[in-house]
Amino acid sequence: MTQFSDLGLAKPLLKALADKGYTQPTPIQEKAIPIVMSGKDLLGIAQTGTGKTAAFALPILHRLAEDKKQAPRRGFRALVLSPTRELATQIADNFKAYGAHLGLTVATIYGGVKYGPQMKALAAGVDVVVATPGRLMDHLGEKSAHLNGVEIFVLDEADQMLDLGFVVPIRKIASQLPKERQNLFFSATMPGEIGKLAGELLKDPAQVSITPQATTVERIQQSLIFVEAQRKRPLLAEVLSNFDVERSIVFTRTKRGADRVAKYLTASGIESASIHGDKTQGQRERALAAFKAGEVKALVATDIAARGIDVNDISHVINYELPNVPEAYVHRIGRTARKGKDGVAISFCSDDERSLLKDIEKATRQRIPSFDRRNDKSLAAAAAVADKLAPAEKRVDPRKADPRNDVPSELRRQRNRNRNRNGGGQGKNGGGRQGGQGKGQNQVQGQGQNQGKAGGGDFRGPKRAAGPAEKRWSPID
Image (cartoon, rainbow, N blue to C red):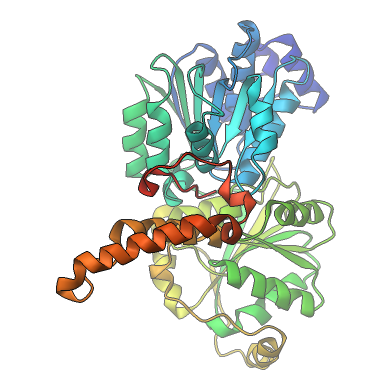
């Protein structure tokens, strides 16, 4: 059986792995590490929870330590792009843990926090930077960072990047990278658009595919419950009251829905917390810390957290609402049954979600065992009480939901304002187009003067030189 010591990794890396109790690589690690160490481009496809982070972190650290040199000022030698803040933090922590005995520097760059500490961390140069695309674009625009020294470029969770609308900024970032570099793409699934992007950026890559696309972990016991939409909350409380549920993640489709579900659970005597794009970084960190410490039994989250949560011993994942992107189902339930353990995934399905269920079963090539709790009198009585504890959210057609709406509200408003700047008042009153445009321009000037007050310091960033507003990139994370 292959050991980490058989892969040719540097002794300090082996020591760090031994400190964490790791001796045997997972299949994705066993296949990917030698390829990355050789300097070849790689396209890795493996479902979540299979050890993708170590599959690229270990060989990157090995290569950087083997050719140790100072990173350029405001630059970095390795760049890892991540879709969410939580996942960026998790990846950076792994880099720090594996490289504990190498003396290499690691920094994280993401939105929702002040720019100052990040700019200070980048000033002297960093060996490894883990970043979300939006905040990195801001730093590049401010010249507080540059990509001239990047030797290794990693795109992690590439398919979620597509779901969140990051393909355009990724292309912009890639256009500023040196031509001579190593490219690594890792993803649980490989949609057509990501395959096209990989074809543009990867040069004669080796491909490692551990499982077929969109398959689910075998150790997860999956089940489906048909239930009326308005009776999901009492059903959820019933499931979570079961003693077998030790620690669970509950996935909702919207941010308001997450808050309402968490409020209902707490009122029902089940300790819970919510996490989504409208929460500040501090709120997200506190909720996740309480979840890890076992202070809350249920963490209610939107899809933005589907791949950014790495917590051991999650016994259950509950899809309170089915995702409108079939591949997201795989990522959601992948939060349980990690590191060789078993897990349970329970999904609720209302009548308006039948088409989503069909898409999920088609993508995963399986039929999920189902139970019918429709017309359940006990749930009907509990639903009436639920509306008093926490009013139900207005139902929205799940097929029309957009995963990119799970971004902070202020950033979404800013994105909409930028869109309005380009359109102004075009088309209004037919012949009044010219006047409509003028009105739109006046609105832009007014918004620019008051932006600091309305938007808050976390989203505004450093002062920028005056220029056409439409050229500025509005970060999503």
